Length: 143
Image 1 (spheres, rainbow, N blue to C red):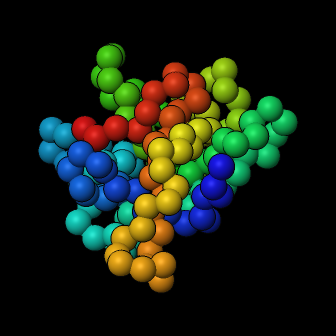
Image 2 (spheres, rainbow, N blue to C red; image 1 turned 180 degrees about the horizontal axis):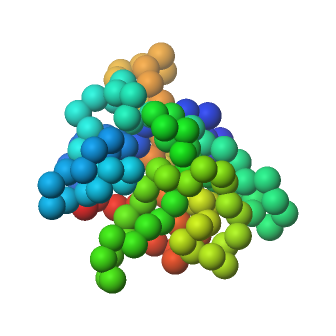
């Protein structure tokens, strides 16, 4: 299994946009603090995330993901009674998988680890994976 880099930018396979922190409410869509695949630039301050390995026993292979813009961890939040979104609002990492609303653990599920962009080995390596929240086993998806 490949090792995740310390810093990542997440791209949607559906719309090709970057996952970004929403710094102000988007009317009728997403409240501030939530994450959305709407970023246009990989280098944006809102699109950079830090990956931290879980520390407690039994959580090997799991990670916490922290937004570099506000230094807050990803956590699942209820948007409506039947929909959930990921928000970068947790102050500290939480490794209690039994509490799905405070747990900040995600499982990286590897799809492909040898895809190269360009013509030779000197080009960028793209690691393709999905992030699954450990609380409900749901994947990070586009809105």
